[in-house]
Length: 423
Image 1: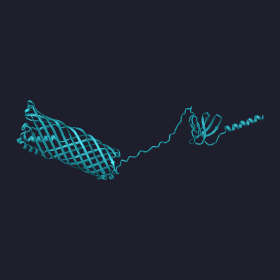
Image 2: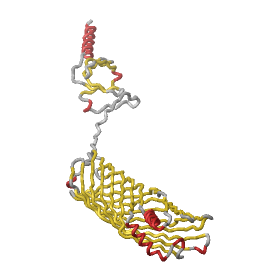
Image 3: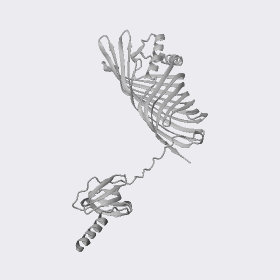
């Protein structure tokens, strides 16, 4: 009886201590599936734990699910290793926050009043140069023919096919002042066809040849007005032009009632130089930070010379009439015209830009002096009479001085600009 009482007391004490809730500090419970729980252990027995987790929920865990129970904060303790033969599930790893570096802000604004930079540009595109060379001489000869009963020459409208052309230059700016060098090279391929009719027959002349023009200009400009959107600069400059028309394979056929009377191979070359002052305005219209409209207009006051020669080898059916004829022309010009430029500029960076646009030149000539020498290796052939040659030349010169002529050149271009800043 006494031993029974002792056993009952022992069992009661064991049950009391084994099932009594634990009110100690919060514990961290590591589960075998990789989860980590934080909370108070309310009750435990030989097979389970009753836990109140931080979210306020009370859950019961089997001890077979538990890997380890520890005191303190989980972030301050070493995480227990998971048994290698157990597969981890639902493990969420929180990555450390990445450090993101901010991109530098590009400043496209240029202080127009304190600039110190050099802007270089290069453009390429489809260009044309259409001088009034052979056509002018033919018009003068036609006027002369009206006075001397010589049949006029009818000229078909020439065609001009654009060819690859280019522009280039550099502009240095110091505060309000700018100085620049600008160059261009325009070219195209032209065709020429003319016909002359007379009582005895007709002749046709045709050719296909390149025409080229180069120019170089130096100018200065002053920033007269500026704000956030608009700049205006008066400009003064001096410009040179060099033009060339060359056709080494021209041909002429002369027909009479019975058929072909003769044919001729011709080598034609005209060279022109012009130079003079330019005065105009340059404007920039900004659209936001990256887009710009650039416009220029300049009046041209030029003077120069044109030298032309045509060497024809005449081969008639009757070879006894073989002859070589050389026509030489010298003209002194004065020319007034204009130059217009437009470019739409996109700034990729504060110092690198691309652009597209066009340029157009046009000028009209007034003749100062004119000289025409017509030489034949067989005097008198095809109506050339040495007796009247001098009078004919003087009459031609007077007619030429009363005539006008004009030339044009243009380009549609795309290019790139680079600005070099100096501090």
